[in-house]
Image (cartoon, rainbow, N blue to C red):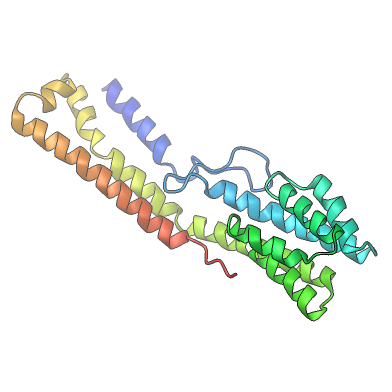
Length: 225
């Protein structure tokens, strides 16, 4: 019965809801592993880092710095996804151009920039104070991060169920081991059992793909541009 017990312990460890949870979104620890979207943790980190960039811009502007100086200071400390954008914005401002167009151009590649791009363009177009606009953008971005975290918490049960149902067919193999049967003796003794095993694998893969698609649609953010 030892293989049976070991197999059940391994299965429980794999499907435990908090098994793949990351430490946080601030860059510490390992990002959460998500079977339906492996880049989700990176996107949340980008959102939170962009909120930090907007906060730094707001603080620099409130301290009396010009937009050119504020962008220059923040660009030197900005994380990798946003540093090239800020450098391009700085070049545009230094040449007397309109930075809102630069922000909007990068929205195609980084949809997270939509809030910052809209706030900056509004400030340039209507003469609205830039510092409060950046502070509001940071609040909007952090609200999105919190919403994504709540979505992940609400779908934790569904993710655990996906893994449990995927691993459930292995119980048959473990039962075979308990009775001294190898997988070949269980499934390979006839063409019918082999066909059933292959069909089961195909249906499992299809079901896994459908579940990933449903979860991805359920947690997909709505980007306002």
